[in-house]
Image (cartoon, rainbow, N blue to C red; front, side, top):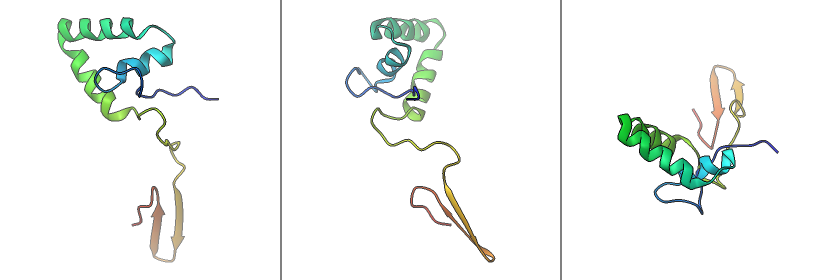
Length: 88
């Protein structure tokens, strides 16, 4: 099974980013949270990184499709692109 990074549903304080990182690296979530707080107070990058990860990293148990798995069909001059039920 491929190891993937997810936000934690169970071990969360805000959005589960630190809990997900801790589960991915198999370390104590408290260590990840302390490092995040230190980064926030050191230069503010911790806040930016946390917000970006909260937006980008999927929630644990959510359906994630690999990149390039969208189905593309070409019919004459019209193109139909199917990706998550979205048609052009």
